[in-house]
Image 1 (cartoon, helix red, strand yellow):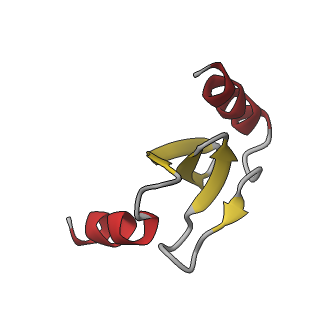
Image 2: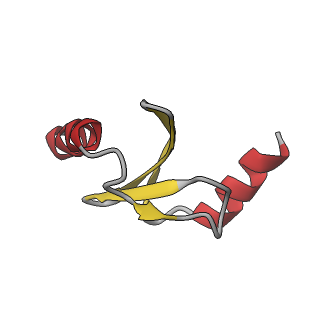
Length: 69
């Protein structure tokens, strides 16, 4: 988990560190941390962590399901 914490700290320093994932959801970004992917969005100076998924999970299905809620 130390790697995940380090990536989250790096994200605080560089808000747009992750890759644009607007193809999945508007304004979403993804940041890889070992075997996990952190999905987040930036609004003004705030970072909203939307979910953290293991690379084996079906990311597209999870994010589409979240959009329906």
